Length: 230
Length: 62
Image (cartoon, rainbow over all chains, first blue to last red; front, side, top):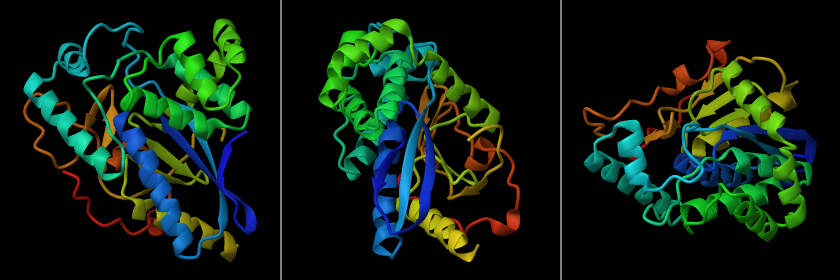
């Protein structure tokens, strides 16, 4: 069940599908900017209920679950980026994160594979609390230096967000949602999505990257107006 | 959503992560930084250019 961010007054919910990865710094920033965009949409009179559904995207499938090293070492070692440039990039991202109220800590960050985290997000969707779990995992990864690749750690975090810890462990042990994760990834490929975050509004409009809030507010208003005109 | 779709892209260049590398459009990328694709390249081709929304104000993140 997709999460609904707010109850509006008219017509069917406006659907927003988001392809995102927990290990994607722009995805967390994009989440904040999208939320600010929704606020702008409301402030300008928008009253459509908005239904948000997160979809799986694995940004770096080659990442080991237990990567031993820092984010700098990963980007420099695995991606071949000059180390000084990596530091510069992370400083830029950290500053922009701060501008939307997020305290990124790349020194503490524990780089890992996010495939299992995506399975937990599918369970959360089925339980109707996907946005809560998305937020908890983003915060754990970027602000708290928590590991999001091991079953026990994921179960702890998911439980903090409202899921049943034992159910999370069972779902991960059984790979219950593995097919759903792969289906999301395949859908992204079919759409031609190769970067995240990527927002699809009402299946018609695409918003790539962590756009400013007004871009989201604008497209939400446009889609709402189109619905009224029909 | 089922099946491939075609999106009308909204907004301008924005920070995105591609293949594990996250960049800021317009920043001094340096010679070794893989470039991020522009949004129009990220999604499929626009179906109806006449209905494309006005671009968002230019970003100043970088």
